[in-house]
Length: 381
Image 1: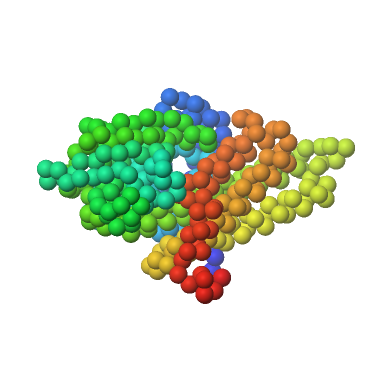
Image 2: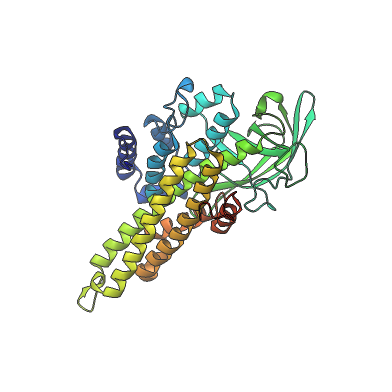
């Protein structure tokens, strides 16, 4: 099997890498995250100009119809450069719109960079179980009335529209009875509390108080949103694995450079065999994570639901374990500097920590992998 990326894929990655090196360096990023908005309109406009917002959108809506593997190379550079703009939230929202069908006008706006999306899926009690939905949507006047609360909505405060999961029937943890809606953030009854997260990103807690939306706000069909939610969340988890890989590559390179330049007892500390062994262990974790993340990206486009679930959960587990090991080793090898705000490695470590907790942590995905059909019989153990 050829594991080399296509020329077009590499061109997207190279364009993003050049922009980050020139205009989105570490100092520029720090100014952005400490600004009032926490994001940069100029940076977002550049992402759109480079075609990043159009990449995952179908050609019919002005996009490039990019696959998960196409997105893989882009998300690697997003992770390497610690980009804090709402790119991930927007492309994940676009994936839900694609899976649900319709909403071509919104996808066209996403492709052109004119629309930012966020996904309001998690709730205070749900932890990593996206089917645990207390938010309700009841039929009202030809549309729906949405009531409930969503927690830690990544870039919820920066988005113009929200993809919202709500329960239209069934018990709180049933997969049946889940419905998805697209809700403009300025709709009456939507209250947003925006804040900065540990890794410099933005998130929001959002309250829906008798929010009235028309039937055209449906993403997919009523009561049948779970398959869309499940597939979209897997897509997002796959993108996060790629982003984590980029962050791990950056923190590994920074640690290696530090060991070459930090002198102790008259020699670079990278000459000490014990530290070389630790770097070798980090490299092994990194390469294993790379293999699993790439496999997940391939399986996201396979059309086989069980294979997709297995590959994504296996990747999210392995990448999460690698992120923890590589990040912790990098911080320790840097010494006290490893946790200072002035060092990029500290920011990569924080981002890796947040990725591990997003769309299911390692424990959640290990349990999900084990629960897949065939595991108990040893079909793919």
